[in-house]
Amino acid sequence: MKLPSQDTAARNQEPVSHHVQLPRFPAGPLRQVGRRLLIALLVMVTTVLLVYLDREGYHDNADGTIDFLDSVYYSTVTLSTTGYGDRVRRPGTATSFRTATAPGSPTCC
Image: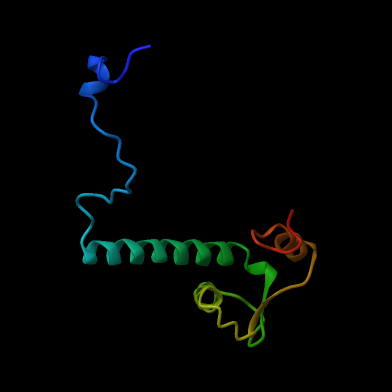
């Protein structure tokens, strides 16, 4: 067995650092805000499209129909967790299934 003082490979190694290193060139604040706004917009557009494509499963207390603008409104209210209750899901097995399989749902898994 060689001692570290006798082993040339061991003497040439740099000491191991156990510190967390942050990125050298972090993104600027405007870029970070822009990225977060883009992600939020993507989430909003996805939610609006999902609500609009499944509009038969919703009920509008005002006129009974859901158009694209209602989908935008419902998505905004849902994502902001306001939930006025003027547009609601219709009860049924699809709603029960979505509730049971939602991530973080107490009935999931």
